[in-house]
Length: 196
Image 1 (cartoon, rainbow, N blue to C red):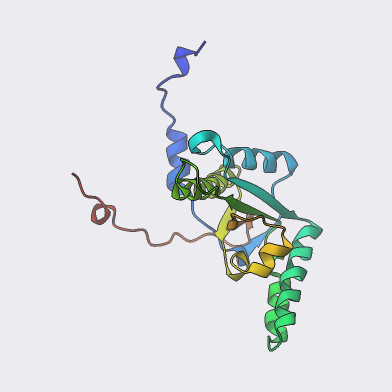
Image 2 (image 1 turned 90 degrees about the vertical axis):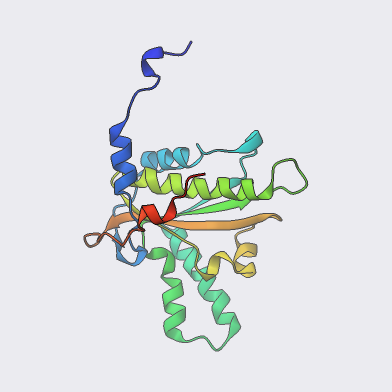
């Protein structure tokens, strides 16, 4: 039975959270990152998104500890094999996943030829990313949702064992800000609104 006292209650702290969330640069993150319990809460929040027909059209890859270095080595090796890439660029790529204590890869898994449009499945994965950002913020962390070249590279996808129909919706870097966050310019809301 539903507890009627919990229905239609206001949650101004939730609005404060939504209105104060902002991304922090992955390059300007430090530790500590979320502990295992906090990380589980962040992933649980990520999974509570609209999902037509309960398809769960997404999954997670968590990079922490040595896994961040292994991922950096993987993408560094891919670029080395290309040839003609500077040592500075290779070093930067090897350190890419070390910028934050935890990185969550959100993998979109779209199923074709079913009644649920592919667009809805992709939007669900985007909602997962946003929920992860919000949950990280709620726990006092800063987060940044990035793709960058490695999210679109077929060799990276193969090394991460992505299946047909899977794509990287984003890599979400989570940590503490190494410097105070500055507010960015926001759009003029009235210019974005029309009434029908």
